[in-house]
Length: 291
Image (cartoon, rainbow, N blue to C red; front, side):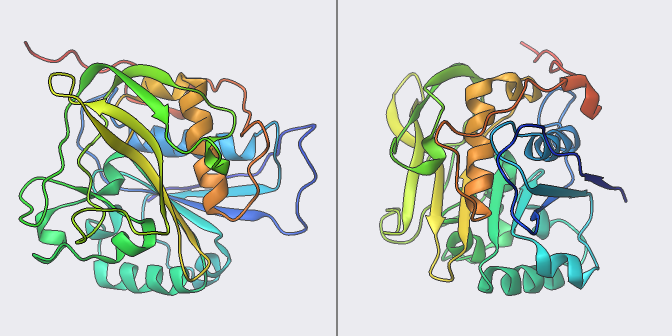
């Protein structure tokens, strides 16, 4: 079990609040090949970027590869970021305790953000109705294989264009449409009302998928919950190298900042290009797929 805390704030950033905005990054298990998912490196990269923003300061990120036992830590967290293969709480030890802890955190208004496969729930994780706390905490989820209530789709495409869906939302600040090779999950699940989003859920990004029969699909969304907490979901990136894309990186960091209850800068979160190798990925490039 590893714990890393990054504390250095970027120079020339805006004035920080008296208390740091606390972000907990929880890295779940993954068995994807090098260059894809890279959840440990991705979690460390996200934490580093949050603490080295050029346009915003006052963030402190704790990175863990397990669920913390420290109740004091959980009580001071402003938002929790999950990255891993499926929603990590359902595959880490002692799932009932983790879900109970999360429920208490959400009730006090803590934010939640899930990245790529961490947006996903398997058939065994949900009842046939599709109900799950993540649906309320985050506004929707990626329904993986085997589910009977809904079937989302996961495919890798060589070029996917991601378009802002709500330009006036704070999470949309400072980033523009971009194209990259990607595995954006689509036909995601938003609830039993004919899969329509709830009134407090906002589509943030869309893509025309699949290319052979294109339909406008939501690939990122957020929710403003009644408990005052906020949830953010982005079903990317599949490839670790995509963190180099400034528009994509700004988009994700905007979402995490917003989920923590902080104001997103007018031009969005600005960061220097990270040294991708510094976060010890298994590979910067994926293993070539067999043809």
